[in-house]
Length: 310
Image 1 (spheres, rainbow, N blue to C red):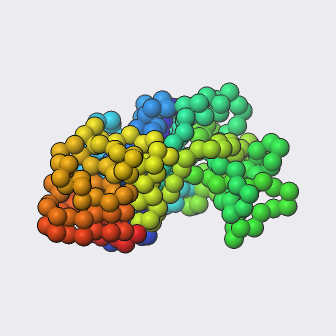
Image 2: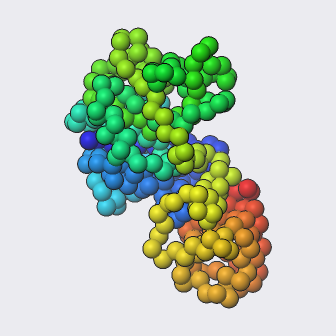
Image 3: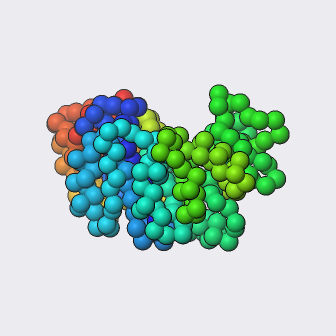
């Protein structure tokens, strides 16, 4: 099985951080989003992983060269191609195996992907869209009895009689889906609709109760850290991180107790060198950040690439 990570975007809502680092390389709980996505698919059985890139490609290329798992990088040098265009661009790579998984680098999703793949493999579906049922504000509409995909929900408009769900950027495909793609495709939604019109099964797979978050904004990115502190998001963290759920703080084991005493609640600190008399509360301190003595950090996402208010 093959995996493919969509990682070419500009990440404009995370500026100024993404002016200097690709969004896919932004760390969440100390681990880059791209690394989490690769591990997610590798654990589900993907032996080959592809990644597309555009923005700050040189950094993506350097990171993939250092990756412990081989990664095939698809540089969309001239333009961002959208999901449909990205799959067309990488179609020869994706066609190596009967099944392939596609996920967005900027989504954190905690689910049993291997079980979803098993469910899909036993079906006759061409594509499975993993989604959480929604009463309103869904992103995709589908037949409530069969799960058959109908359309994207534009401007919250849902076709009469349809159910709606939040698609969180994880999809499983059979190799034959690639025959539905054309060189002119950008968005993947028209390709799903084209396949459906050709009598093929594009189905929404409901996964109620799954934890997932978009990392598009500083506040959303920070919330994942806070959810990890609260025990709602069971994400792997670096081995040297100490997570204290009672105090809602996390820091490397090298940070002394005297420094931790200056932490308020909901602090995720990924640096071991915390200067004296620094007051930190409701904030994220990313790896590589530098703090001066007597710094007060509140409601802030601090990184080596920029600072964002929460």
